[in-house]
Length: 314
Image (tube, rainbow, N blue to C red):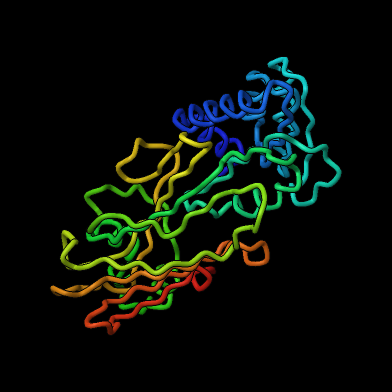
């Protein structure tokens, strides 16, 4: 995807834009009109433009791609001053005047894939005491998938034919997370929160390694057969201002994540379906997601399947 196409999708998301505008308006009202803003991953400068027009005194835009040059052009076209532009990764930036507000909208379809967590943890050094961050909190959710629709779209390897053994390609393919439009009807049961983050401006920093174990009883599912799992998230831009990418939420440019299995897991009465998730987004790692699924019967696990996005890289 080209850089401008990415920004077209972002700026075409009215729900995102409304939520961030409301959060900026609230934050600037709390801090006061002389506030200073640092925009991490500023892209085209849209959020800094809004902040200036809402009364922020000054905004520093940090963006490592050439989009920063477009941001400068757009600022000039719109007569927006009070801006500084820095082309660099925010972790490399030193010597900035402390800000009252840090904003960073770098959420991915898998919430943490664009290093949102690491960027906000690092950006705490830019803030004045009692400064604010947008976003302020994030929750990640998972649910088992009973519909075979998504799995069938991905797992095509056995249907290619021509008497070829493509098992190695199939294994590589299934050790990946897939961006999909997932419907409520695809889900086997209710979602569970597997990760909760608060982007606090002081205290201990949250770890880039996130993990959880979730279980769903067979009696609470609409089907005994599980083909994979769905992931999505809900962000709190600022207290009381939230946006969700859940299948039953209003559509945004973000989609959900589908985690395939190597084979369906079929449950009987009294069984549990168990999902273990491990996410590692340390800069030295990139983005690594591991998921392990099993049937639990009488406390014992069977049909164990362990997948790892690291194994899916070609």
